[in-house]
Image: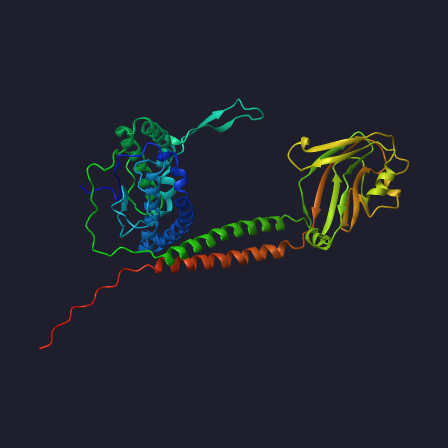
Length: 467
């Protein structure tokens, strides 16, 4: 009988220490650190393998062996720690088969893979299995809730308990602590769930076209015992330290390229959102007061970094629009503004976030009466305008004022802040250049790393005795 090409085997390594499981999380930290890097490399190489299968119908053998090694390493660490607690033997730092370890994983190398399946199997076809494996490993239950304040209704996580594997392993840990024995029924169930999860992982990672069976094969050994089909003898690929370092470093660079590409894309979107006059603006925030003026808190600009701040922001624009009454917007020295508004009723804005609700703006009320003269008639403004003002930052203590142009009471307006951000185009171009460099360098290191391993050199040929 031909077996499934992903074979997960395990052996309960009794007797187990009663209390060692309490500290295995700490003992496994070095493995967690290494695996976090190896899984980045795994993801990058899976993308490379995707295109290789799409164009050649073959999974490059060096990439296959490395990704198989990552899965093996992960299974051994999970078996030692809280994925099973099936052994107290510390996992080896190895991508190899390690057949003498109590947990093993083998995947038959596929000579050919379907070009069509590679497009859909890792997401569409595997969805039913993802739901099952999610129940095994995550245990999050999702339900519809309509009793949450400020919500009409929606999907919400209502339970998260670590999954069936976590629950069963917790029961086994308690049994170990008090009885010194691992319940065999629980063990068989735990290994069966891990076997299902690893089969789905191999299928989703494009390492086989055989659809994972919907059956829970419990116990350490698959029944019937399934041996790999005979294949031509081939020496196993031995990954050297240099190859692993090159692959991990290349994966990190490729991962960093994803970050710089995201930052460059965001920068490009922001740059394209500029208005026709070259300003990048915030969303509108409604400000309102029954008094005669609205002011900001003191804006202190000083020190050696003023020129850098000015170079960063460029020209600043403050606009207040949306009312029938003409509005005045001005930027003036704080001392002169305070003198002008000393006996005037106004609100000082103490919090302004440009968020989605009116509660994002808070004010402090200053009592008084109406202004003695219209704001535009005052001589101290550094910049002023009707509805909006453009200003270039310079040293000093400044206050922004919004008033009705005639100095009357009751102000309501939509406030927006904008800046030209002259550096935006250069930064966008630079981020995409850096992305290209990181991606090319990372890909080169990964390819170098998978080529560094080599099979052992053949022994010397037997000599023919001379006559």
